[in-house]
Length: 446
Ligand code: TRP
Image (cartoon, rainbow, N blue to C red; front, side):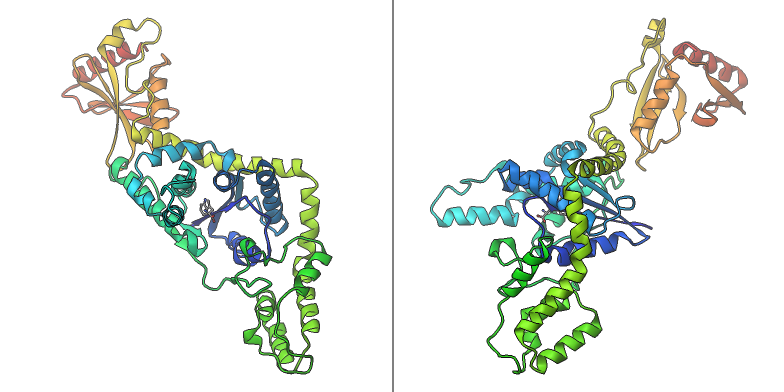
C-alpha cells in the first residue's frame, strides 16, 4: 500500500541551513520512495496568521518554492502546491470548524501561551488573539484530512496539532461517516535521526535567535556565516573536543562517515579552528553549490514557478474536488435533483407519481430507489462509490433518453453504458414485471 505523506511549510521566512537539514532534505528523500505519495505545500494561509506584511509573505512564498525545487523535489512524483490555490481547503475548514470542540482548541499550546502571557501582564486573556490564531489547528486539520494523509512529518511543536486533526477527523467520521472512515486518521512523525542543527552560537538554529546560516546566500555569505561560528579559545596545535563543538555537529550533518572520522581525528590532533571552519565551508559549498545556482535561476523566473505551482494545485484538486463533494453529501449539503423527481418536458403527471429517493448504505456507498405513485419500488440502484456518480446516474434516467432494460427471470435490470446500474425487485410473475416496466417508462417518460 502506498503511504501518503503530507507536510506544510509556513511562508514567513527565508529557508536556512537548519530548515534544509531538518525538514527539506529528509522530505525530498522520502518523496522518492516508490511506495510513498507525498503532498508538500506552502502553508500561506497559515502565514497570514503570523504576518501582516504582504511583501514578506510574497517574497517568502517565492523563496520557499524555489528552495524546494532547487533542492531536487520532483514535482512529477510529489504533489507540490500552495495552500491558497486550493479553495476546497477553506471550505473543508468550515465543515471541520462545525465539529471541532472549542474546549479542544482552548488547549492548543500556541493559543494557551498567548493567554498565559496576557494574564501575566495583567491584560485581558484574549488581548491580541485573532480568530486565525485560535482556529489555526482547524485549518491545519483541513490541510491534512483533505488528502487523507497517513503520515505528517513535523517538528515537536506541531505534534499536538496533528493529534487535534485526528480528534477532529474522528469526530467527523463518527457524526457523518455512517460507520465508514470518511477521513483517514493521520499520525505525526518526528524523525529521530534527522539533524536538529545548532546555530552560530550553539543554540538551536532558528530565525528567532538570529543565529542562522543562510541556505542560498552567495558563497561569500556562507563563508562569512561559518566564520562567525562560536568556538572555544584553544589554539592551533591544542587538542579540541569534537563532542563539545557545535562546529563539529554542523560538519556531521553533511559529511560522509569517512570524512567525519578524519575530521574528528584531526580536531583531536590539534587542527586549528580557522582551518576547521575552512573545511566546513568547503563541505557545505560542495553540498549546496549546484542547488544554489538552480535556486537563483528559478528566483529569476517567477512566472515559471507560478506555472509549476498552478500545475501542482490542479493535481491536488483532482483529489480535493471530488472528495469535498462527498463530504458535502455526508453533512447534508446535497443537490435537490437526486432527491426529487425531476419532471422533464411533458412529465407533469409523472412528477406527481414517481420519485427518486437517494440514501447512503452502512458501507458508505450511495444508492437511490425509484418508487412509483403508490410507493412501490421499481428500481434499486447499485452502490456508487460517491454521491456525485449516483446523482449523475439518476439524472440520466430522468433525461428522457431511451432505457436499456434487460429482463432476467421475473425481474429486470437497467443498463447504462454496458453496466447494470439498477435492478427491479423480483416480481410474482411475468405480468407484474411487464406492468412495472410500463410504470417505469411512464414515470421516466422514456
Ligand atoms: N503549522 C505548521 C508549522 O508551522 C505548518 C503546517 C500548516 C503544516 N499546515 C500543515 C504542517 C499541515 C503539517 C501538516 O510548522
